[in-house]
Amino acid sequence: MVTRRHSRAGSVVVAAGLLVSPLGCAPGAPGDDPASTDPVDLLHRAAPTLVRAGSSKTRTEMEMATGGTRVTIHGEGVYDYGRQLGRLKVLLPQDPAGTSEHRPITELLAPGALFMKNRGAGVPADKWVRVDTGTLSDGNLVTGGATDPFAAAEVLRGARSASYVGRAEVDGTPVSHYRGTADLTAASRAASEGNRAPLRAAARGFATATVPFDAYLDDEGRIRKVRHRFSFVNGRQQDTVAVASTTLLYDFGVHVAVRLPRPKDIYAGKIAED
Image (tube, rainbow, N blue to C red; front, side, top):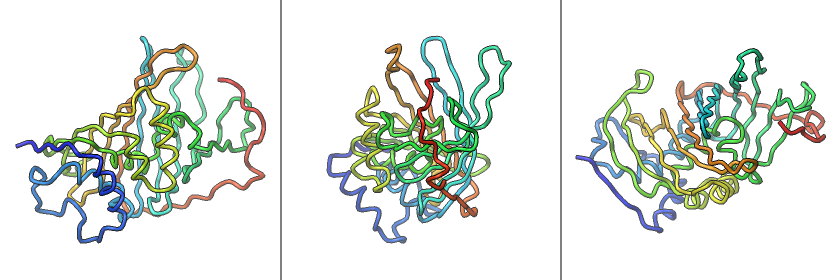
């Protein structure tokens, strides 16, 4: 039987309190029946569960569609959930003629900041571009071509309703599949300090603060796959852009070494319009 729950405003406070919940309350213990567990509570706990897991490898896919145009951006890297530091290599799609190759963009993810190398747009190849994610209209859920894995988990802190879909597999790992909607404003209030401003910006900047999602949790309550669907208005053409962002997490406990750029390595000039 599918279990459903619509949470009240007080659930935001409950989600925030999960940051200090004891390890013994971790969701998804082996042998638990997912259908008998409150999906909203499980999803609210997803981000703290990743912090306890420590780190993982990640693959990302972002599909953007507007009018008759559709592009897909792929990423791959590692993430440390305790320090909220990550490194991704992002591959941009070829141009419509398929004749030009884009160099992979290296992205470093940090609380409140995104660093990009090989950004192009007039930026020297040996320099990094630093972006304050709290100033982005999408909170860097879309801008970098990949959703920050921990931000993707923290969006689920704003889950308002969710249902258990059933058992499935992600890359050979048994998982429980949940589907629901999250509210970015509620997520920003319950998020960790580094993601509060970005998620608050996204709540204001997207066409709607309501985000449909599909989340796949393993038997330890860790996210193995999460797919969000965002919508925003292109500022130039005023077209609505539909974005489907998929994040996969695997190889938990992997060593992650991320060194942020020194100030002298950060580009301070003007970035050309793409």
